Length: 324
Image (cartoon, rainbow, N blue to C red; front, side, top):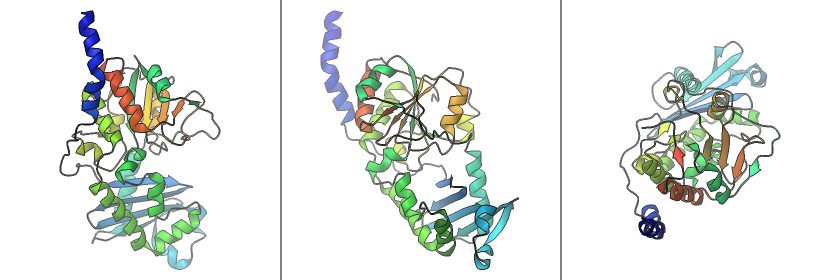
């Protein structure tokens, strides 16, 4: 028995290398989810969707920004709710305001709490070896964000905002969207095409094998089909996935890979459900959703995932929640 164990451990590095660096299996076609996004910045709500060369823009402002607009700009908005006004633009024949309202209704249905943010926190900085030791034997959930796809040529949130003309000057941004929707639409279509044409990164590859080895699905908020092209059918943040599933078992940690912000409030919701859960960010920059008790691992994502895959293959890690 000891001889067999020693032989297995000797062969294990080669086995892992063969798994990790085998040619990826690409899956043709796009996933069936809607290519749509909506989020809020400084009290203004932005949204868009795209399909081929067609796109729709949605913009909602409050009284705070309404009074800054001139009469011609105000004429492009309609009241959406008391004290709020909505602007819509679409390249097809549909009602632009109705389409814009639909984007925000679906966006609201996919948000579960206020985004988790800390104004001043000092999370514990760890290396990949520390993360490897900490998660061993614990129940963890992987949650991927836009940063995991950056190596695939797909913009992360910062890059996407640049394409959409969203700057720190929110008033200038609102006026740009109202006066130049075609220009903003070019950014939307460029993002859509990047998602369609990108190839999975090393991080997608490692996470795909983690999902296979542990018989788990991947939870993501990304619009791109990189997980699908690795042969996976990821679970995307939705009310059905998050609120209607019965999660009886506690989660020890949520490992966020390439996630810069808790835009959908998922991390906040999980903190409410499991107050002792640790949030661990694998990200070059320290995200604002980490508290003092949480952890930040600035190591390269694919190196961290490959290390954890090795642990999963030796059954040192236990993965739960969102089972297939």
